[in-house]
Length: 236
Ligand code: SF4
Image 1 (spheres, rainbow, N blue to C red):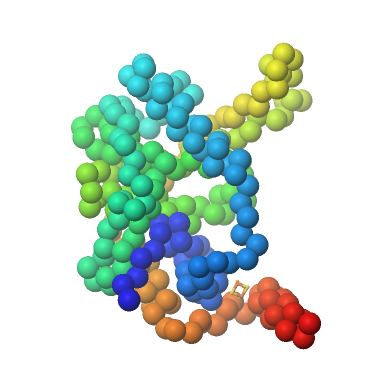
Image 2: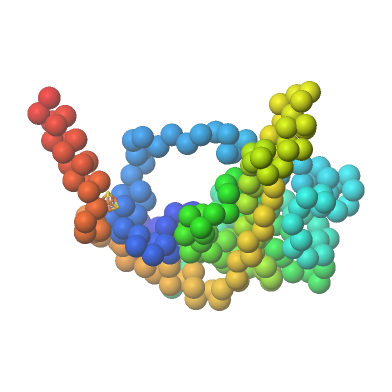
């Protein structure tokens, strides 16, 4: 059966030390247990998109808080993952995704943005290989749709302003009503050649083709914990 994979899922195998077994299980399973995700992050993402779009529609430019990405002439309508897809002819794998923002720059090139509600810490940077793959997957799809050429990619981190000691004005701001602000920080991502994504698609198809899962990472205690849980409930 033809394989379809999301940009987010593909990015998992770009992270050093990824586990092929975890990747296989995540791709094949329709319902993984214990997968609740706090809805607040989606709300913040949606809010940022609406505010940026609202400002652009009314003022003809991005808001002052939006980090500089070049001379923006337009905000494209971002397709949903159902239609934003491309099939790699070599592997037959279809890649799909839904970028947060596609900006049209002067000179008719495109800049793709992904928002992250998180602090840009060293720990966050350790996830960078994954995000490089995710954004380049969007660029790969964009290059086969109307968004070509893609000239730039950015991660924009929204860091919550909570350090009242360093910035006492935060306390003043919150005297009348409770307000939590965020500081956007841009992290540029290199646009890679198509072969970067095609190699990941080939690796994904090699891992996912077999009917049985590959071995997990040696030394990971979680698989053992899962087996113990299964055994425990079977006996019960
Ligand atoms: S070895 Fe660890 S990382 Fe791999 S499948 Fe098992 S739990 Fe997941």
